[in-house]
Amino acid sequence: MASKIVTRFPPSPTGYLHIGGARTALFNWLFARANGGRMLLRIEDTDRSRYSEDAVDKIREGLTWLGLDWDGDVVSQFSRLDRHHEVAEGLLATGKAYRCYASPEELAEMREKARAEGRTANYDGRWRDRDPSDAPAGIKPVIRLKTPLDGETIVDDKVQGQVTWKNQDMDDFIIVRSDGTPTYMLAVVVDDHDMGVTHIIRGDDHLTNAARQIQIFRALDWDVPVMAHIPLIHGADGAKLSKRHGALGVESYRDMGYLPEAMRNYLVRLGWSHGNDEIISDEQLIEWFTLDGIGKSAARFDFTKLENLNGHYIRQSDNAHLLAALEEALPGIDPARRNSDAALSNQEKTKLLAAMPGLKERAKTLSDIWQGAAFLFAVRPFDLDDKARGILEKSGDILERVARELSTQDEWSVDTVETVIREFAEKHEIGLGKIAQPLRVALTGTTVSPGIFDVLAVLGKDECLARISDQTG
Image (cartoon, rainbow, N blue to C red; front, top):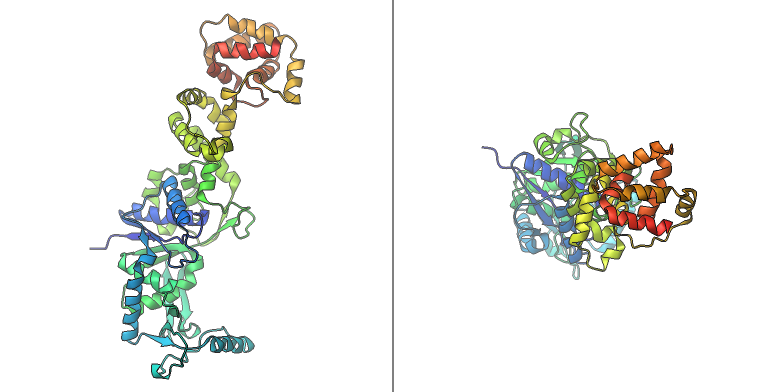
């Protein structure tokens, strides 16, 4: 019986969960869920000089916001140092590793000689078979893996295909530093083995590491996990992804008003495909996701495509769901709410829910929805800008006449107010725009808003007449 699939996401706690890491986590999560397996979360925190508890919190928070849950407890790599040392000592005992006493001066001389001869600055193996009794005084040794001197190390990668390294071009690399701390190479292999990881899915910048890690697996007679190295994400211009392209923390996308379901859909399409499908639900992703669907070319991050996709999800979302998402994102969307009680009042929620059908039609982000909803909470009388004032000045007595017509309405809804205004426009042979725009200014204080009939219906009869009166009285 085949073993249960286990993937892992192992971020370093040195900063936020960036967009590339989020995609890697998503691919691991999808592959595990698609195959009834487990995804583990391991914090690679052995470098204590760069460790940040706040970064750990942000990583967990980012994954949770994205909807990527992990199985079991979060594993701290630092807590497993004793196990890493145990394995290193075992490699020494079996002659598959050795202590190297080369001094810093010797190592510098090796590098300089290699440069002069046009070779890769590899360690020359001078302590590989030397008796430790020859060790010079005052040198704290490192532990190096005794790697094969000939033959090849092959990574049978599920994305990149078969990638081959000649062993003669690879040196005896360090697995334990002179201060006794294990290197990334050793710690990752030991942790992956002990945690039962069956599949390693990560960026292709780790492809060189894969060859060295395979050598450690083989030295320990452990099964090598299946590997899949996914191409990195580039900017829309093809350059390496940077902050100007969108290489931000996941929380930044939440604060800009993106929905997690839209982010999942967008991120999975950065490097993975299922035919020509663009809009893909979570259920479809889990059903369809395979490593075969990952391409070899670098994906390009495009804010315009992300915004359009997010707009689709906003329009298709239930109004109550959008309200909950807006409230969660509000401290980031609205700085005024950041240092105060960000929770919406029941009255604000009621107004937003009523206005949501009109607000979401033109919105691409939750931020757009919040900006569009400003008229709901605007304080009278409005402080109009020059453009808005100019529109009112050109409207003559239209607003007063429209207000008189509206005041006769007992039933107040989108349909009834639309009927009144369209009949008024037809009766007086006035273009609808010449009525709608001054109405918009009077009711919202701005020249841009949701549909004017939606605005009228949401504000209610009394509030609408009062706001019109402010501008005509």
